[in-house]
Length: 138
Image (cartoon, rainbow, N blue to C red; front, side, top):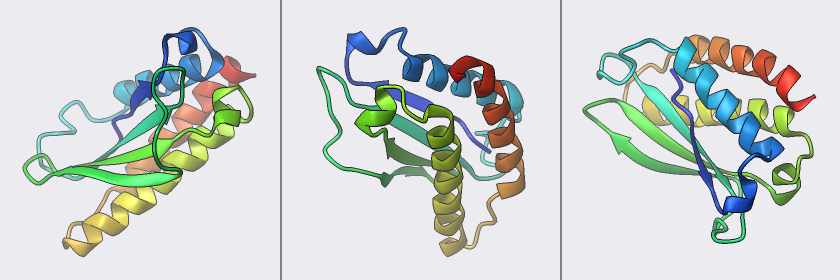
């Protein structure tokens, strides 16, 4: 299961292509995931896209495992958006590829705890997101 978050590093990003795409992805994930995804019955991942801006820039590149909620079985995976993508290059490809990598990281994390991650459910949501981004980022 997937619950997407976004952290935009400056007000200039409001209305940009990356802002529109990530908010679209977040809305699609919210609409397609199970209603009670965070009740602790099965694990889920919360990929948070960190977009560099004029006020804040991430202090790392790539992916970073964040907070894990044992009770809710939720795992945060922080994803730094490269400046070129923040500027509008290859947004939909980056989003799809990054979500799949976050799911792999989550599946590995949960496997170490003896918990099976619902990767197929997550992949279905990612495919819906990719389809939903085509008209937005075209």
